Length: 173
Image (cartoon, rainbow, N blue to C red):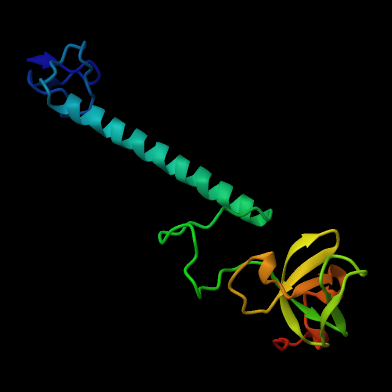
């Protein structure tokens, strides 16, 4: 019979732990180690705990990055399982819905010298996109295709407001 180096009590020769004080003997200590027993469990637990913390911290890092990037206006490209192209008739989120507060002319190009293609009346709403040189390409609000060839024309950007006149929900064109 061997004695525990901590409490001095008698320890069984095939036991790695002292039953009285829970002293855990190392492989080089006076208490014998069981082959493949408790040592293998301890190593696998350490590996599992290490793996848990690695996954936890990576997840926390990714969630923090996404949270910070979303608050700064950065957005990730949308992922679609259906493929890269949208299905016909499916409206994607693109552009911004803007409102007119007065009569606004729709031009053929981004210039006041270009031809007038039409007019928007106060309270009309359009989908605006493709900002360039202070002008926006305008589309019907329910337009599903984001293509300048499908635009109604161009409007000087300061004439299109984010809110409808009177602060209501706004009418569609």
